[in-house]
Image (cartoon, rainbow, N blue to C red; front, side, top):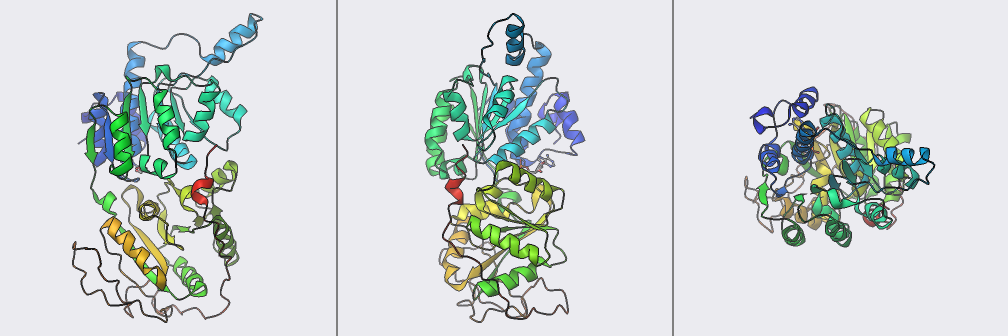
Length: 465
Ligand code: AMP
């Protein structure tokens, strides 16, 4: 299938060709034609599947076709304000009237969607997309809103602030997208989302993207969509077949730190994300890795937006090789050179495991996802396996074997045959390792005494206002 056969506007196809996209991904093949027809969509697909283009391409197609039929007339709110100033009148702020709203759980994802929109809309005459995010100065956002952008990409909290102060009017809204809806609900945004949805016209087209369409997400989806087309993408991106997953058991923090240092020296590693449970640990571990000679940087919700953007830019440019991050801050990071993901701490929720490992193996590449796990955490690994319906093999690096072996051998591991209660595998000496042949195991001692605070508030602290 080609992008032409999806019926997209020529200006959009031109931008896709320049972006190096040769054919649509699975989710795009299904979503784009239905969305062009104006259908509501409920799409279950993971990040990395090309879902941003799946909702943005049909929207841009619609706006390009409208522009062609009736070129824009009238003044933008900015121009109106200037005109009233020149008439000697006191300028009044006219609310922005966007045609499309994309809600995302995090600032990073919002920025990424905005960047992708600029790329896909590069050849359209006038389509402006802006991000409305917590952490950004209000005057700057007012300036952006005064340009009356067609597309708003926003996190819910800050958007509500602007709605309540009369800066945004949704009466002209045609398309509403909820990106990573499951995550927004996880983060407690349900009331905000309902308020925003209520402020939009009934006639809108609604597209909801989520890792799962069950439970609370499913209920909300029923309320806000009309006769939706349901698209479930169960491709390799969902199963993460291109990502080699493994678990390493560790005895204690010192063992964990030494093993992490060793694994980060793997020659096949280009860039890595190390996930920690707390913001403080992200800082401490990034500092420690820098001292150990890795170009590392922390990313978490306590950092100012400017610092976060700079860190992400450095990651994209390859100046940062190891990003040490908390879950929420790292969500949506799309850097194809990330070859490895390390779970320094296991995530609290199994869904987060899937989002974490999805930072690698992007855009059709392969990746490696390693979880460093205390013996007592075996039960959490099982929860993840139950969620992903995949077993995660246990691996051991020569010279870094845990003193305690990891429970019973995994005798009932049948291909494709996961069932609840499967045993955790025993650590096989001589199992696959990252070690280069002849690489000397590092000496005991000098272990990092990280500060294991209980400050695991990354999730809520992202409060985005
Ligand atoms: P997403 O799932 O939207 O986060 O997209 C994941 C990655 O796939 C991004 O780097 C996109 O630029 C890339 N991508 C999206 N659609 C295509 C396509 N049709 N061909 C090649 N790459 C794509």
